[in-house]
Picture 1 (cartoon, helix red, strand yellow):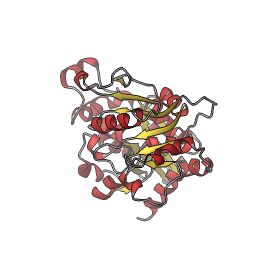
Picture 2 (cartoon, one colour; picture 1 turned 90 degrees about the vertical axis):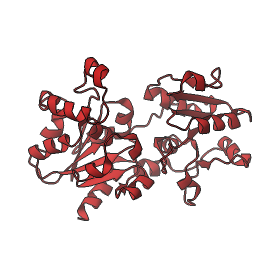
Picture 3 (cartoon, one colour; picture 1 turned 45 degrees about the vertical axis):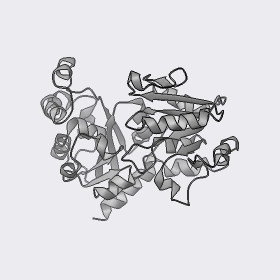
Picture 4 (cartoon, one colour; picture 1 turned 180 degrees about the horizontal axis):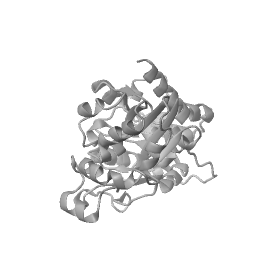
Length: 322
């Protein structure tokens, strides 16, 4: 089966999914600003049904271009083809993207992959599911709750340049209702003398504590995030309120051979976890001190587990069950 992955044009997403560019598959990256002018954004914003309505209006302008049109032109008329629509693309375009692909290739299978928890999307998941042959989620709890299948998020590109360790712990992320938890972890680690670097976005001025030590509301390009990872012994993962499963931080830690300090309930209850996982415990600081011990495991195993090839094999297996 051949696959066409339709994603958002973004360095972060490209790092995860760029291996879809390898023959015979295809990667299409659509601009996140399609159909949105500054005036439209100022007047009505972009949430709820508005982007879907605008997508229908502006779709003809892009149907034969170099971005969106590629999703329709590739594999046209072939029967053993699957289009994977990333969740953020679905949020921008809505079901009209499925209709458009079906018109060009009625025999194609169409799958949606949600790379974030359902609560972060503006669409209704139950009404969306009927448009797809298969809907997959990166979160186990969401998959079980909404009748989807769980599939681990892949990771394609690794930066193997040598670097020097500068930090014990690093955190990069948005507040997303977890600020108190993030600050608690920062206090626990920094007060114990660990060298930490924290970037927290989306925090109001009156909520910015330790603002001489924590960096607030400063955008980092994903390349900069990767550089921080490579300069740190341990990555901190703090899950969103509705999340159950590990995030991209899990993949980054495995592939860059870093420890992962996580509050994942799933991992805390699982015995068969990678050797770099540390489930945070305020009482047992000897667990935290593991970050000074060298990690010894086969990175190539996880490169395979987190590969696009593994992802597509799972999708093909799920589709063939029908």
